[in-house]
Image (cartoon, rainbow, N blue to C red):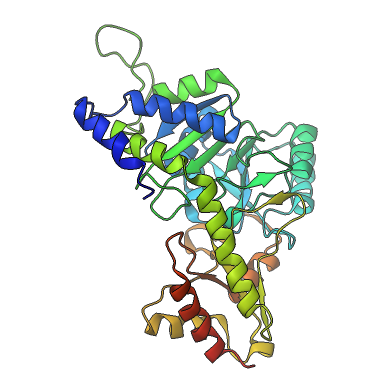
Length: 365
């Protein structure tokens, strides 16, 4: 916490505005739009809720195909299934580890030739770094397949000066407890299309029709953010740039102290943008380092230091094994060798030194 949050939460108590919605929700949406450069936003209970509503607003129905990044967390894909859709996984490229535009083009060509273009594409901005949106947006326009951006991990990053999440038809963000700013649980759906966000707000409040009585013509959801949590979000938003600076400093510390070791490398920063370095991700080549990713993870765990493997690709997940995938070798390679190091904004120099010392003691020098 930054210290700003308490005054907004106290205001919610002082005004007795505890129930969902309220002035802090409205203010959080407005302030968030100013930060990311979007025209409209709806504050929601989670990033997953935001993506689910985006799927509904995009008209995803049973049997519809949706192209989606292969290297991601399952929450990027689950909302497709909520709507009865079928994910089609697209492998990563090596410059940013995000969705590969060349494989995306292969998929679109194949689907167009079969007369079965996907209903949408979900582009995930992985570990705080924007995908190659210039190439992806060109393909979206060429084939008429709308983009929904999963920028859950990328708030505070840039793509040619613009915020990931604002380059497609809709974008989603997460304020889960592990994100670069948090409301403990929460998310945001953004779009320059006011009608989409207005409809999202309606769906997120049980889709109540504008009538004096309770009347419903659509299925709705209980997805809106509370006034208290929005107050937390307002406080967190004020220190977003500080959080990004801290995460980037964490990355630089790891890179400077471990990058020279044999077989150790780090997630590159693509030339088209600036990463928020939400997580520092290290790759371990066992042939050169004398140890593998799992040995390092377990050694850290013995010292009560949590680290995690890179996301297991979606095409390797038991629940998604039956779906189509384009490529897959890059994401598999990153998963086999990738390790997410402790990256929190509250890490001290002593914490970082301790982590570096342990890794150095494991890797051959």
